[in-house]
Structures are given as C-alpha cells and as structure tokens.
Image (cartoon, rainbow, N blue to C red; front, side, top):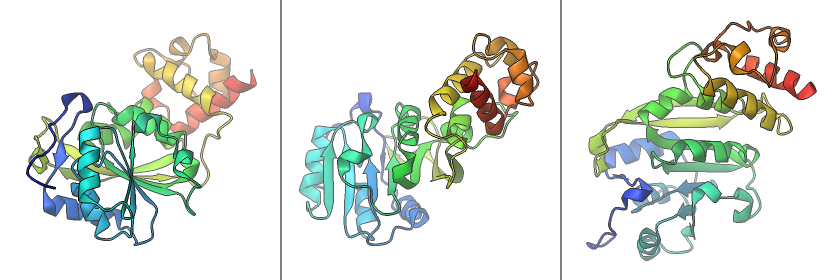
Length: 263
C-alpha cells in the first residue's frame, strides 16, 4: 500500500495485524467461499482485507478513519472492495442493501475500546447475520464464553447467549500487531442461534433485567433486582432469591424477563 502509511490514531484504538501466518490462520477459520457476502469492520491498512480478497470475489467494508479509507481505495479496485466510510457503532445493516441470502458474514480486528458496544449493536441486528469472526482482546473473549459461576461470567456473556453461541478459536500474541498492544488477543466465532432464546419483543425487558442484576453483582437477586421483580417472581422463575447473578444462566434470566414483562 505504499511507503507513506497513515498515522496511527490512538482515539480509534488502532493496532494493525501484520503477521502473515496469523492472517492466513484467521482466513482459514472464516473459510469464505468466493460468493460469500462478507462485511469487514475496520479494515485499517488492509492486511486482512487483502487476505480475504484472495478467496472472495468482492468484499464490503466499513472504515471510520478517512486517511485509511483513502489508502484502501488506492489499494483495492472498487469492484472488489465496496468501502463505506463511517462509524460501525452506527451501522444499520439494512443500509447496505437487501440482506444477502443466509445473512452477512461479518469479520474484523476490532479496536478494544468499542468491541463490547459494537457486539451489542450487532446482536440487535442478528436476524441479518450468518456468523461473525472477530479478533478481540482475550479478556473480552473469555467473558463471552464464560460459564455461570466463573469470575468472567457477566452481562456480556448472558446478552450474547440469548441470541448466539460464542466459541474461542485461538489466541493471537501482541507481536502479531503493530504497534503491539499491551494485552493478548483471541479470535472468536459467533454464530446466531436458529431460534433465539429471547425474541425481539422481550429483548428490551431482558436487557433491563440483566443490566440491573450485573450492575449489582455483589448483591443477591432479591436486593439487586429490587423495583423490577420481587422475591415471589424470582422463585416463580425457579431461582433462589438469595443467589448472586453470576450463578444464573441465560435461561434463568429469560424466565425472569418473561415474568417481569407479564407483571
């Protein structure tokens, strides 16, 4: 892409993947077919973009940094790379055109500072998504895949489990990036459930219950969910009012949300 690379902007949390073996491993995990509808979030300097385009006929991407977008346009022909400039946190998948058959395959090396809000944003559009493969901070992936009762189990785990299954694939060391981050990373595969545990109508109430519970994670369900559900409703959901939120699985929270919505 030429010798004059755009400057790294700390406010965008940019760490560019450059390890060729790791790029090949990531693309191998995604396993794109030539006509797959793939959307890359934050292509940056185009390392993963180029690796994907070795297998794809065309690729759609969203980039917030105008200098990087200019570099991408110079490096890839418009018929191969359909580039949209903007913030992925505001991305409406419907704005990209009709939903492809089977849904979008979304990929990206996500900046650590937006990874969690972006995941929540995409989960709200899960009906238009086939799968997602992201390179994330290892700690975030551990939270996504945590089991009830573990220290890393929390709001992100539960909200994700209501609509998708997350699978940690492999770790990525700091040296695979420029500049090297101070944390380790991991690649995660997120596959939407064929039948979400929480439908769109119930999702706002479910989110409210989960948010309030984990905002008070040191409190019991009875105390932490005060004002939202009472002890009787917690027991009606077959849960112990004296339990802590990190011991409740996604089915328990879904049951609480259904009861909260009905009262």
